[in-house]
Image (cartoon, rainbow, N blue to C red; front, side, top):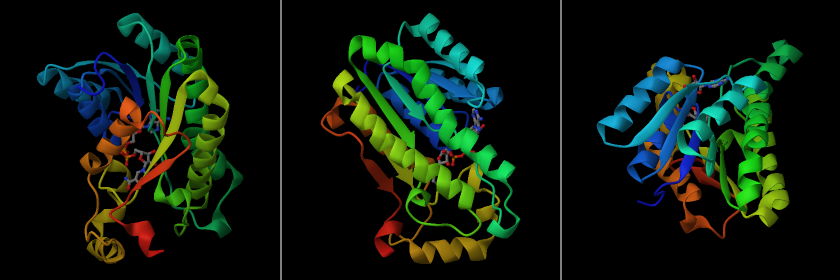
Length: 250
Ligand SMILES: NC(=O)c1ccc[n+]([C@@H]2O[C@H](COP(=O)([O-])OP(=O)(O)OC[C@H]3O[C@@H](n4cnc5c(N)ncnc54)[C@H](O)[C@@H]3O)[C@@H](O)[C@H]2O)c1
């Protein structure tokens, strides 16, 4: 019960890495707000948590819309009284080669992956500063430090989020708030379904991963749990890459 009675908001918890984290957090005693713009996905995650006797609510949120984020926080406080942990996990990606990349494509990805996280932190911050306690975990990517083909906007958004993690760690440390990131490698989720539908692509990646396989959401969630728990209380501004060793080969 490493998160006993802690209140955690996890964005994008209607599927993939966010859903696996929500289920794990609830198993460790947290009261979980499963936030996603896919309400059906969020409700499915809550159902799984409740089947295991955990506590959770589903909240519909689009993290590009500030009023919806405020509503997410209001719902959290109404249900559970406060916010202790924020996992900025919601994210999106599109493959667009640079010659045809438009300003609007970049703005769209930045709006979700970078500004979305920024907005969510702003909304929960008053609760964390008031009690001088908080854990913020940003889900970045190996793509925050290495380039992917046709992923200019995604690379930029995750690189920016990595540096925001470090900047916030600096500015929020005096309030007892830890800010860290988890950078997944190649993980089978809805986001990567199309990419990994091609067996040649899967083989190409597997050859670059020392552990020889793609990751599952359940491979990533324990690192997020560690950063949300007090076991990591002397860590801030760090990124833990959970990538089967992929970065070690670069
Ligand atoms: N799958 C991978 O290989 C991989 C690798 C590195 C990083 N990541 C990151 O992990 C995070 C989770 O992705 P995933 O792979 O589990 O994908 P996923 O598609 O399974 O989950 C992402 C979730 O975010 C939600 N979402 C997207 N935009 C949103 C918005 N504007 N407001 C609210 N919710 C929104 C989606 O509805 C979805 O449920 C993302 O930030 C992604 O960039 C994934």
